[in-house]
Length: 325
Ligand SMILES: [Zn+2]
Image (cartoon, rainbow, N blue to C red):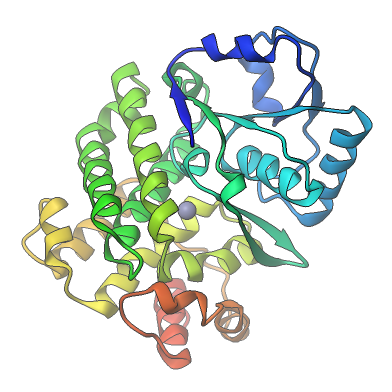
């Protein structure tokens, strides 16, 4: 079970605790005061690797922490979850997202990288027990970070919607998320309070949707793009997304939600949006990369995709996404 708060009143419960605070350097720009001593852990990158997690477990154990608080984007929250996972400790997690994208605060899984490969951890116990949603924490994000995280939320909402694992409940979350994202995109990109607030909610709803259904092909194909070209997760997913949809066709109901008459128009709409946001594919991909990328996609993970893709289809999709001809 998870409780969501819109202020810091729940910090009360930390009074007699010694939390491990998992955060990145952005934490120092916020005025978040803890009612207790914390052991801070910030030694992880934007795509946390297994070695980072081991360091975190060591910090947790050396400081006898009895709580985990994550303040940050998906990397901080996923790192916190992975530390709990690998430590085997039964500690509650409090998540305070400072980006509106990953929805990691609303899911029971975490993505880390091990030997350059994406490694997905899943356990019911990884769902944070407490979440604090504060729009003012989004203020210091760069415009590029805001674009990437918003696109991640949008792709997550739509992928969840068409995924084989979708339920009535997850589709309800997806629809709400898509509506909120479209209605608030401009205000959010202008860094206005109302836009930030609604985007934070949208990201949370998209997180709840994928917590039920998980994601599909665009996500499965994105992870190696992140590790190979160093592009952020949301950026990598977004460049895959319209090509994947065009390959699958259909899902006109989702196109309607995007204000478009059919899937073809919806794909064009999405590509135009990426252009306007100046989000493009890396231009240094080679023919050799295609083979590496295809082999990185876990075919089993693609099973959640509504349509089966064979290896040749995936290779052609990568060719198209990266413009390698
Ligand atoms: Zn994502």
